[in-house]
Image 1: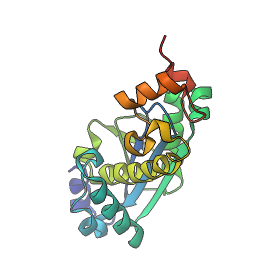
Image 2 (image 1 turned 90 degrees about the vertical axis):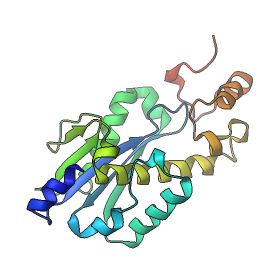
Image 3 (image 1 turned 90 degrees about the horizontal axis):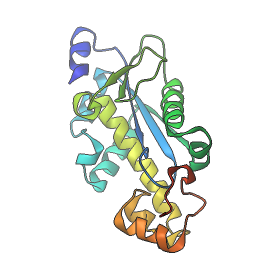
Image 4 (image 1 turned 30 degrees about the vertical axis):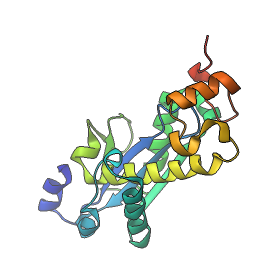
Length: 195
């Protein structure tokens, strides 16, 4: 893992990992989480890997550990209206930047999964969740918090099964859009209605 080299020379160096969630979703917000950790937190990272490779139960357990620890983290969202107004690329950039800036301190090393941002001398990593535990942890936090929101609103929009698809374009979700149209949480700029 990329942080191991840094910590082997200076274990007290803080590394911020940041990742977004919901970029390709049809509905709901795009979010980003950032975590700020150093070598002291290594014991809490033993089970941390790409959020997509973990069960929802395991993701929630890891998130609970973070909440009980002294690990600093932040989570920022931009809703579908912001996405429709400014585009997904800018929304993606804003959630990452705002999430990092709320915990960043001078001297921190910042890694972002895949996406390039110009601030904080951030380093963009391809397959960041597989190569950097701080990014993997950020991906878990982002997924837990956004999933929880989509589950929460699924009662209001029960025809769309957001509790299952989290707003992504599953076959069931596409059929619901075709049958019932778009809700006020769908991203109109994504041209989701069948032609």
